[in-house]
Length: 59
Image 1 (cartoon, rainbow, N blue to C red):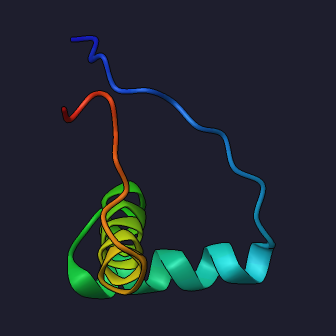
Image 2 (tube, rainbow, N blue to C red):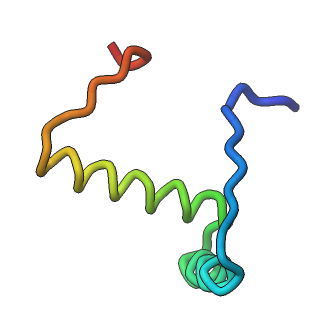
């Protein structure tokens, strides 16, 4: 089944990637879902300090 989620290729240091895999496994998530959680947390933190980021898709 094909989804409509956008794709993003990322280049990352091997040590950071290994640590991300470790954290994801510890939390019981896939690496992709762990990264998504980290991004959501960072966006929430940013918006609390700087204000809501407007997104045309959400409007």
